[in-house]
Length: 185
Image 1 (cartoon, rainbow, N blue to C red):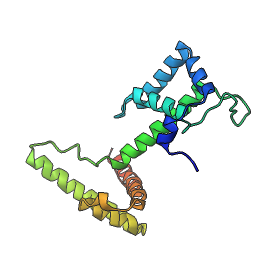
Image 2 (image 1 turned 180 degrees about the vertical axis):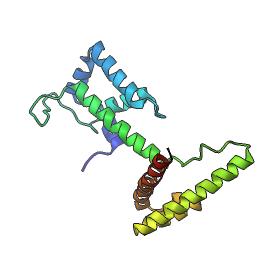
Image 3 (image 1 turned 45 degrees about the vertical axis):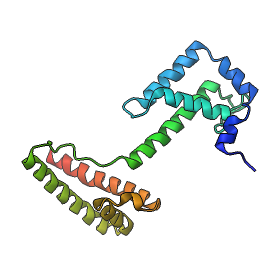
Image 4 (image 1 turned 90 degrees about the horizontal axis):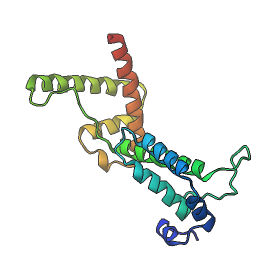
């Protein structure tokens, strides 16, 4: 039977991994820090957390590494390369999770300006109607149901498979509205 993540965190890490981490040069550490900074630029996460998470997952065995590991071309995988791969994967997962739960916003409405807010609301309603029609044309009834739930603010009570429908709505909206804005220019 496998160990849970908390059990793995408490177990003793592979001494070869610990020795490889201890042997990292200042140049390697700076490279890893710079990579973490670049992955977290313009994102709501701290680069330090990303770097620490990559080391933690490597040490506890969630992302196993061994000095004997080889890539698909039979070249050795360095610890630095492994940690960079971990950070890439972790950052991608964090950003996917964050975008999955980030609310849609209406940035162009000026707060306090009632006329601008009314116009923005009418624009949003027209856009939603265009989106609804495009989803009907594509026979995407799951996405239509999700769009209605979003409108009623019942989005969080939906099953997980609706999140894939939400992504389809976002892609459809992007295709619809990016092409119409290109025509307006």
